[in-house]
Every structure is written in C-alpha cells, then in structure tokens.
Amino acid sequence: AHWAQPCVRVGEFTGTGPDKTDDKYAYLEKSFVFLDGGLARMPTRDWATEAKYIPGQVWAAPGVPRADVNPRPLHPDVPDNGLIGCFSEDESMIFATAFEPYQELFQGVIRCLHSDFRLGGLEPGQTLNIRGKFYFVKNDVPALLDRYYRDFPEHKKLHQK
Picture (cartoon, rainbow, N blue to C red):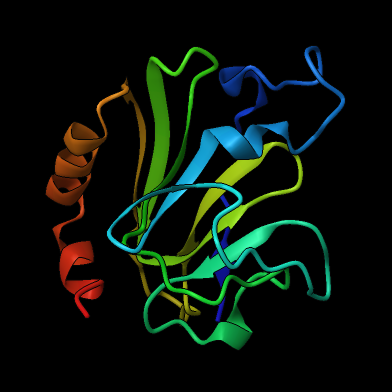
C-alpha cells in the first residue's frame, strides 16, 4: 500500500536540538506513545533494534500488514491509539500528532516523530479524505486524550481488543 510521512522535527521543542547536544537521540526520553493502557516514554519496553534500516522505531496500526510498514525496527506491539508525541524541554507543554487513516507511528532518525497516514492506492479520479491534527497543549495527558478521541472517535473502535 502507499502511505505518506508528515515528518515533525521536535529537537528544539524538547530542548534536544543540535544547538544543545550532538546526541541525535536525546529527544527519545521526552517522546511517547501509548502502550499497555498508558503513556510509555521512549525507549519503550521491547524496543526493537534490528531491521533493514536502523535506527528508528515503528508501531504498526491495527490491521496494517507488518510487512507493509517503514522498514525500520518494528515494535512487536500495536499501540493503544494513533497518537505519538513529546514533552517540551521544561515538561510544561506537549506536542502530539495523529492522522486518519493511519498506517503507523514512527520515531524517526532526524529528531522527528511521525503519525504516518495510509493511502492504500488511488484509482484515476478517485479521492481520499485524510484528516490530521497537530496538538500543542499544556501538559495534561488526560485532556489531550479526551481531545484526541473527540477528534478521532473511530480510533477508539479501531483499538478495541
């Protein structure tokens, strides 16, 4: 299937930009996905380290063939929702992003985070509606989740086990 990667560079927001550190992965400890019913800071448990291309980390969305995602290290679990984000340098703010239809969440290799959306291929003349959100909010994870599920109610059903 075809998919697209809105790449959001978060180094400056997290206080881990190139002007502050040479460590391109310092932003990981500020970044998160949702696993096991809660927020999980990166690197999460069961962090994958082997793939065609390294480093990075991919979480495939429910129903997406695992062979059809970015060829970076693939986390063994499906995330609890389609939200990926990070905390600001002083932890007072959150940046997060989500798209529908979503393909995967991706911790990238240039101080970036992705909620990649699925195109699935288009026939000539066919249209596809894609919705995405970037959230810049105060550090209130329950409020962020409430807003996310209002914006993407279909994700709640998608992730029911």
